[in-house]
Length: 193
Image (cartoon, rainbow, N blue to C red; front, side, top):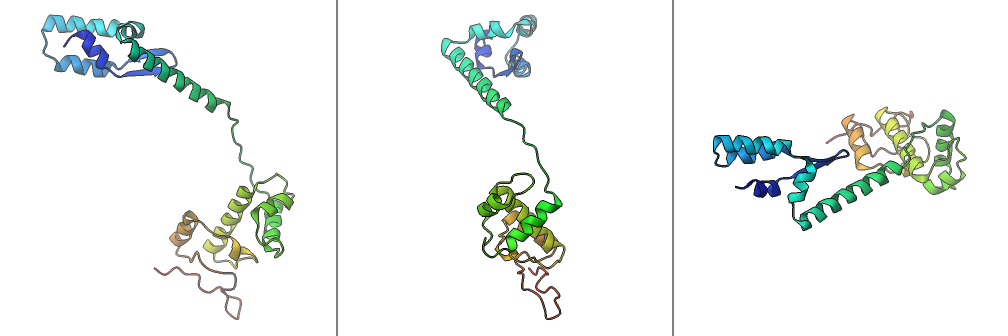
């Protein structure tokens, strides 16, 4: 196998500093090829000393164009990632959580997440997804802790992930607000397979 043919079959990796050949793959190709010891050693040494630009020159025009096109696309993708602002998690305060519980209990709102987000007047502005996620998290805490569900929490629908977490604690994720006995004790709270 000629050196030029071997070089065109190699995979190339890139880094911000430029072109770097996959030396291990090249060495494997040379070691598996029939070899004459002195000539193979010279070829092996020469391949390690060659720069990325010399190797790129041996590629056909179409291969070079594809290589450069993939490089440009990669750099463009990286540029869009860098420009996005970093998200910062803002924890819910106790007063915001109490306000959310009151709004969920309000029968006029009927547990509408967009309405709660709009009229909630929280310390930190919240969108409907954040409001719904917090409500789901609260329901999980109430169910896992065997607490009485506050009013309106029958309308907070849990996803599969939340249900699995509750079942893992051997609790019933489908328990309702009115699952109470005449003494006010929780019923229907143990998960049975």
